[in-house]
Image (cartoon, rainbow, N blue to C red):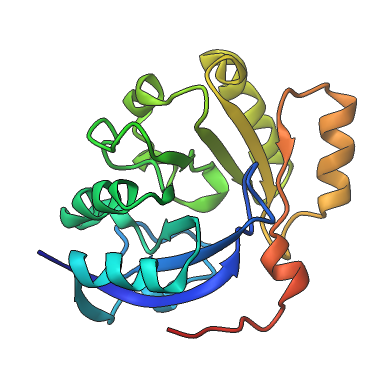
Length: 213
């Protein structure tokens, strides 16, 4: 059993309610979406094959309690579920970032899911798999990446339609360079949106990413 891995490096969790925690980031290659604001296009192709056992050994050797499994889109590779299970079995807390277009019902319940709902501004809103909402646990998270006011209004209506704040924590994220974070913050306050302002801590602290396997 093997996975195509783009990179592995120690990091801080950059987004979500767990932002700021040290973790080992494992980025899998390949993605089925092409969001206009994507900042990890280099992960769409390439990578190195690694076995599940090898990745668990690396995680154990690095010594981080939290593992951030991201992409690309991790769930495109079938063995990602086996990796999540084995990492959990080894005593790690797994944070899974997924774009919301693929089924999540088979993801081990112990994993912390951070799932996107793609907005019209992403160009990929037709890929949203709304059935996934029924699979989210109260401890999981949803994320909207907003490119402007149209996305903000759309996300606000989707929140109301599906009563998302009753399901789990909801994050509103400004797309870098497209929506002013302060403007988004003012909107959340003004409209009393039951969502968390989600900034990319890694971009703030490390504008030029430091990587290492």
